Image (cartoon, rainbow, N blue to C red; front, side, top):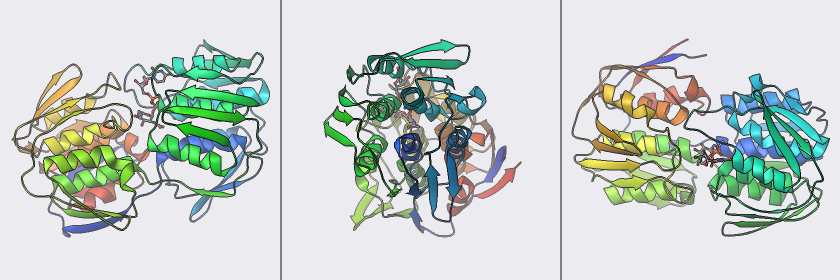
Length: 418
Ligand code: UD1
């Protein structure tokens, strides 16, 4: 596994780039969990070879499922699932493992599943998952580093999520489909990946009616789907766009639905980035001078918490003070301290960053602490003079297939240290 990138910035050879974006990690993970509901194989197209997906696949195989990589699709067969236990050594590597608690407990009556891992972005409680499951008649308790769950009279339910959690929406939706009768979920998340899961399930025959943040679900129907193509990854797309904006390179995103990035694109437009749409492509070009901005993260369609670290790098190229407020996670500014090491003029005030972009960055050693923060630091190396050593890049392979190629497309020379 690659441990470090040594990145030397340079000028892009090509000032007009075109890119196709792979499938969304955050769509594929819940769809893989939902394959537990299918009585036959399914082919998933547009699946990138990244570690979060590899780790979810390992979990499915550990439960008795079969997963085969083909050239352009992943074939998943969960018809012979027999396991109801997942070890902590598997679940600590991928947070979406929690999505299997409900389905396995409904199918087998009980389950013992390691606590979910993932990036340390804050407290990341699982109370909405656990309380939601309880309303369906699934009792869950924490024992050491495991979740022990038991079904105690399964029943459809009406449940209001106290916050539109992405994972809890997906988890409770998948679980409700296994329980006969009408369930209601209120205050659901509307992130594009949640809508993609709903689309997948509806194409499989699930009876799901969505009205704004409310889902009416008729559980207990038999589902079946042969193949599905997931939506492209908006966070990977935002990484490419950020690289284009900070290096003032023209970029064409091929076949990319603009609604997936409405939050990011509308802010870019406001600060002066030129964005055009041609058929299904998005064309980005950027003047030298951009305006500072104010953003606050929140549930979709508010500004994405996953994209805010990239806005900090964009802010480093804009004269004046930009403000970023993070309201989704408690601990999402870890990258900012590292960015300061590169010379960025940043003030951190609890939930808000103030970035004065009128400073030249200079390469040095910076440490990755979570997926998107590490990617943001990699992007910052593109505008840092000389050499940047990015340490702990293991996070990047959890979500990006070829992050080094991305940097190289924008003129960097990247040496991977194993
Ligand atoms: C998903 C995304 C992640 C993104 C996040 C928010 C995946 C695999 N990951 O993570 O990239 O940053 O959505 O858009 O899709 N919360 C609770 N109790 C719960 C669950 C969540 O309080 O039971 C809180 C969390 O601590 C956090 C907020 O809700 O403050 C959002 O979390 P959630 O939407 O659940 O994020 P994930 O599904 O883990």
